[in-house]
Image (cartoon, rainbow, N blue to C red):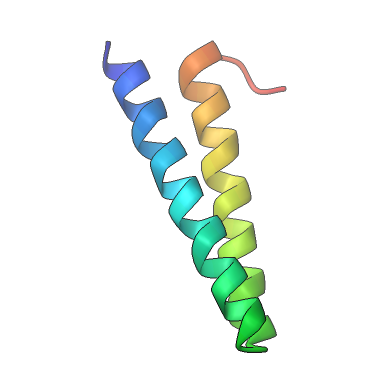
Length: 56
């Protein structure tokens, strides 16, 4: 149960990071956008790890 809750939370954070990254790309702040994309990828990996208990 704890792992699925953590997975949902990190998936939610991943979605927020993707939205923020798209907005920063529109404002042409590429450095900040790269940080948001990296954070979204990290949250996606954590979501996969939480749900399936394995990486890749």
